[in-house]
Length: 319
Image (cartoon, rainbow, N blue to C red; front, side, top):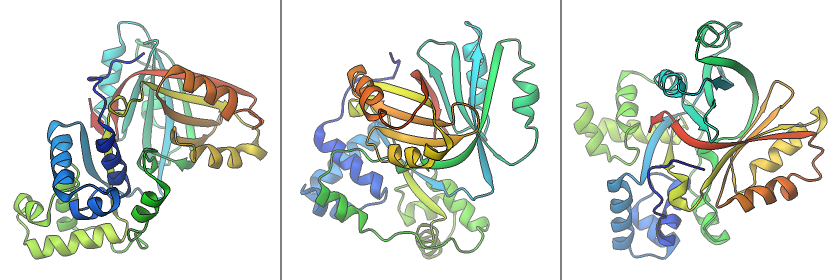
């Protein structure tokens, strides 16, 4: 079902630390220790092992403004031409997500854009490519949750409560200047870099970097995201489920499914299939129960489940 790079599952104590990082990617070893009940030395050791091996990455992501729209693309491709199209899509800065179906003939991608009547990629470039047999493009109308909102369900209610007490970003402030951009660029590859390390990379004074970093994070202009292969968390099934939901049930259904522990993305879109959810499960049985039990009683007229065989690019990171 999948061609992930490794099937080694992280230990439970490592997974709990991953979950803590999802709440606060820059959490200190001392803070994580007080929440999880590990020694500070153990937290430091596990963090060094996971991040040093590349199993877990914490990156900084600037907050997207309301003027940035998105389109969900489903691209049908001739067999044997898949690599050419996926590579071309993954190279684009305005496409942060690219998946390939388990059947090997469909690419799913997210295209970010400012609103424009006729996007060249959708209306000209993809249709003109001989390897592409069909393109479906559906505008995202509302985001119920996205990958950065997902939380690994391995913590106790008390631990989640303690982590959620972290200061929440205030309203966005000033526009970013050249110094801010330098700092963000440094943090995009490692969101846990210290102010001293960022100062060394950018050439700015450490006091300036420390003050600017505090401002960027506290005002919500920059946040962190944990990147980890779901198979390292024991989740072998990766799927996108497209649903047909009556308009009067769309909002309630989207909000409800966004809270499901397996859902790491829920989007309302244009088109007949107007709700898309991305899910991770441990096995095919869990996916079956989700489809037959969790989706029942929600007035869903139909579903189209696409198993992901391989992810090519996620959150802007190439495989």
